[in-house]
Length: 122
Image (cartoon, rainbow, N blue to C red; front, side, top):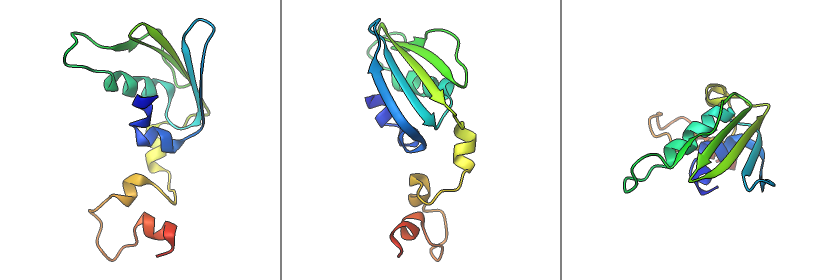
């Protein structure tokens, strides 16, 4: 969950993020909207790298699709399930009142209202 929390794009775009321990000691993570399951699996695998350890800490544990994927992290299986996913490309294109990327964008001219100004009414 710490690896997911480090990815603000994932947390902001998902609704109903839930996780629980399975009967077989695996972890199940489920969300609505947000990224495809294979995109989350790739992000988590990238997050799980340690230069002190030879080889990856996380690896795919079966086929991945838009709706489901599984990864193995240090011998623990994580089953990922996306309900009604939108995918990264659609999420970035979707306009919204508050997006962290927009709020931190300093490349726009100064006379343009920023997302945080819209949010706070400033």
